[in-house]
Every structure is written in structure tokens, then in C-alpha cells.
Image 1 (cartoon, rainbow, N blue to C red):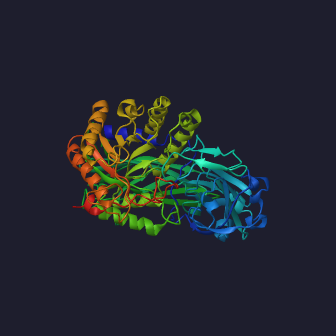
Image 2: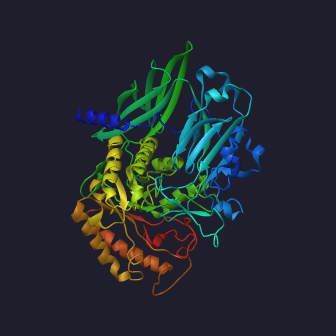
Image 3: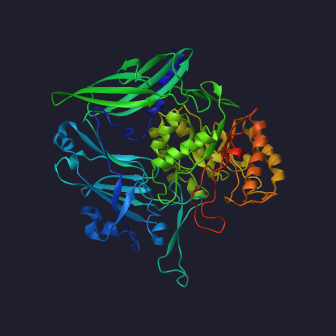
Amino acid sequence: MALCCALCLLLLCCQALALGGGMLYPRESASRELKELNGLWSFRADFSAQRDKGFVQQWYRKPLRQSGPVIDMPVPASFNELTQDPNLRQYTGWVWYEKEVLLPRSWLLNALNTRVVLRVGSAHYYSIVWVNGVQVTEHEGGHLPFEADISRIVQGSPGALCRITIALNNTLTPQTLPPGSIQFMTDESKYPRGYFVQNTKFDFFNYAGIHRPVVLYTTPSVYIDDITVTTAWAGNSGMVRYQVLVRGNTRYSLSLNLREKEGKVVATGEGPIGELKVVEPKLWWPYLMHENPGYLYYLEVKLSAQVGGELSEDVYTLPVGIRTVHVTSSQFLINGKPFYFHGVNKHEDADIRGKGLDWSLIVKDFNLLQWLGANSFRTSHYPYAEEIMDLCDAYGIVVIDECPGVGMKDPENFGNKSLAHHLVVMEELIRRDKNRPSVVMWSVANEPASELSPAANYFKTVIAHTKAIDPTRPVTFVSNANYARDHGAPYVDVICVNSYFSWYHDAGHLEVIQLQLNTQFENWYKAYQKPIIQSEYGADTIAGLHNDPPLMFSEEYQKAVLKEYHSVFDKKRKEYVIGELIWNFADFMTDQGRLRLHSIFKLQCKDTYFLP
């Protein structure tokens, strides 16, 4: 009974979002249809001095080609590296996308019982969306989905083209996530009039564009808007506590079936709130922790309601993994057993397509992760695509889910406006990923200036807000601050620390790594009595460069650095170190500069990392 009450309380907390409505991933069903809009879109960057020509001339009111030249632009993709124009690669400001599509007649003729929804998986960073010249939504921030009900606009003209226009702006300010600043160069003897650059304090390229799929999907007019599940198990019983939100009518009925992977129904329920009991549950286990990792059940939710005197039904199926997470002063427990984060940090970019979703790359990455023996990764330094997260759920890859709080180095990044936006971003992230068994911890920032005094209240507030929304998962942020002056560390559940001994500090001196790393761990643990993850470590390498004895940037030096770190990890994991996440899994793009050799970080060799 106590467990049931606790689950109920946690479930209600998970629903306590300020956001209006859910954000279920679009899935086809007997009641829902889906039309992908991936492919070539019309595109134009606004190179006017104020970047406002598109709004002054109202480019959204008519086809984009009628207001000037357009080029083809693939979606999903970043726009930066797809042309031979260097000005577009470094462009900052408003760009315009447009797509004209025909909608199925069945979507348009049954207006009484059909909703048509436009959903954008991710666009960087501020988006405004019009359909047939009518603004339907706007959204601040990249990496997370947003959508709009466009039924009234498109259902008025059956057979006509549906013209979708998306204007997005990749400008970063001190109050955005990630933050940045615009610097105007006023010396006209060196720079053209009006010349400016976008400055950031994070070390990866600021790709922009529509990075994830754009889709149209339908639901009935009375529909399942959101589902929240929390899970637990004890003895030979598993519990799946659920809450379903319905919109469009207050009179309806709900039935639920929980199915095994093979289709067998193992539990049933009715109503918007309840608990499903599973006898002899198959728990969700991490990769290499069980012979059957990533086991998923499927929760089928069926809604029935009367619409216009006729029966209307909506069906949505949600993957569910039964597992628990618990943190002690020295361990991270999954299903009651100690878990060690043996993983990597990643980036979501690749040549040409930038941060655009690419299934071939995703599949290759997961094969490489399994080949390496990795069981986890952090979504450094922003939320990754839902499609990637789906595979983490299915393969048993454990995820530290990080928001775009990277590059927060200045006092103005910790003001009230930044804080308000940060809270909304965490709400959006949790709303999207709350049901994922692979997500075991939220990270609210990477390497912020947490030694600054405003950081204390800032992170106290962000972490408390995150825990209030989702009490089922621990919360962290990743620090590179001095342990004694880190104002955010008292509020996290797990200490995550980045350090690069013999690289950024004492460069070339391999002999100091073990002493300095041991001291680091002992200082952090003595101060906070919390488990520690080495959330970044490594060395830059130029593939094919060899030196013996090892010298910096050679493959031998990278291997030597890793060996020294691993020697300490192997000892400290017996005490309170609960993980190691190498930097970095694979190449990624950085800004041009004398300290970076284009894309510098190389995939770690298996003989120096996980596999013997």
C-alpha cells in the first residue's frame, strides 16, 4: 500500500507542468495518420542589414518564390554546410523555410472529428510558423519539439495546397540557452559598416536549421493528449502507475492493455488514473547488465467518446520499461543493483548535414557503442532527437539527459530572464522524455560558472523545479569548478566533474595524472558525500600522428592519458566513483581557431577503452 501511495504521489508531481498540453511522439494507429514533410524545402536567408526584410515585406503572406530567389534546402539538416557560400555557413539572423503540400481529403472532409496537427521536432533557435499566411505558433529554443493545431486553417479549403512557412532565428543572447552575444565591429577601417559576429562560450559549432522531422498528423477531436507512467517492482510484482490526459470532451471512457513484446496482454485497466500489476515482470536492464537488456512493454490506451452522435475512438501505444533508480552516498542503483556508467559523451553532428537527423549515422553510432562495450552516454550538451532516445530505450543504453545549459560563463547568464527560460526548457525536456526508462538522470547544465555568487540561487531554483516536476529521477549538472567554491554542488544528487589533467592543465606531464585525479575525487567526496561521475576526460588526437615516447596530439599520448585515468577509476569505483564518460565518442565540428584542427576529437580505440 505504501508503494502504491508513493507511486501515485510521484505521478501527480510529474503532471505538475506549467506547459499547456502534452507532447506525445507522433505514432500511427487505428485512429491516427501521419504525413512526413521531410525532403526539399524552399529556403532563403535574410541578408538585409537588420535581418528584418522578411517581416517588413511579409514573406509569409504568399509563396516564398514570389518575393525573391529561393534555393532548395533539405529537412532535416543544418543549412550551414550545404552550399558553397561561406556567408551562409557563418550566418546569424532570420532564415525562411517553406513547403507546399497536399493533404489527404479524408483529413479535410470530416472536420467535426478530425484534428490536423503540425509538429516540428527541433529548429534552432527561435521559430515562428505560418500556415497559408496565418501564424499558428512560435517557439523559443532548439532541440525540443513544438506543435500547433492547424485544423481550422486547412479544413476550410479541401483540395487546396497547404503552404507551411517557418522563419527561424539562430541568434544567441545572454538570456538564451545556450547563451551568446552579438559583437558589432565599429572600426570601419577594418570591417564593413554594420559588421557583427556571434560570440559563444561553448566549444562546438553553432549549427542552425530545421534539424529534426516536420510532420503532419491527425487525431480525433476527442483525443489522448498526454500519458505519464511511473514504475516500480517488489518481489515478483511489477507496478505501472499511469495517468492519461484527454482533451476535447469531459465525457469519455478509457481502457488500457499492457502487452509484452510478443503481444500477450499481461495487465488491463480502466479510467484516467490507475495502476497495472504485472506478475513476474521482465525488468528493463542496461546493456551488458542482463542477457535481455532494454526490455519494453507496450501500453495501449484506447479512448471512446460520443462525437456528433457517433462513437469516436482514439488509440495510442506507449513503450514502457519497468525499472527503478535510486542514489545512495556512494552508489547508483538500477533495479536495486549497483550500476557503473561506462560510457561516452557525444555530439549530434556530422559532415554536411550538421545536426540534421540521419538514420544511417544513428544506426552506425549504436553499433559502435555496443562494439565499444559502452552502456551509457550523456546528451552533451543538449537534448538529442527522440529517434535516438527510442533506440536507447530499446537497446538498454542508459542516458544522462542534458538541457542546452552550456556556455553559461557570465553573471548576466544567471539573471531572472535566463532563469525563467531555463525553467521552461526543463519542463519541455521532462514532458518529452519523462516516460523513457533509459533516462535515469537529468542534467541542468554543463560547466557553468558555478563559482559566481548568483549561481547559488539559480541552480537551487532550477534543480528544485526539476525535482518538483519529476521526483523519480536524480538531478545533476556537470562542473569544472573548484570543489570548495561550487555554489551549485550542494543541490545535486550526483557529482559530475570534468577534468583534463596533463592536457589543459600541466600539458604533457603524464606523471601527474594519478595524483591529481585522486586528489580531485577525495576533495569532492569529502566535501559533499555524494557519488561521483568523471563526466569528461581525454586528450585531443590527430589520427595517424605517432610519437614514441608519447607527445601531445599523438595517438600514443591519448592512449597513455586514458591508461593513467583508468588506473585511478579502477580503484575509486570500489568506493564512490560510479562512472566514467570519455570525451568524446566521435568527431564533431568546432568554430575555426588556431587551437582547433577543424574537427579534432577522435573516436577512442577499443584497445584503450572498454574492451580488453
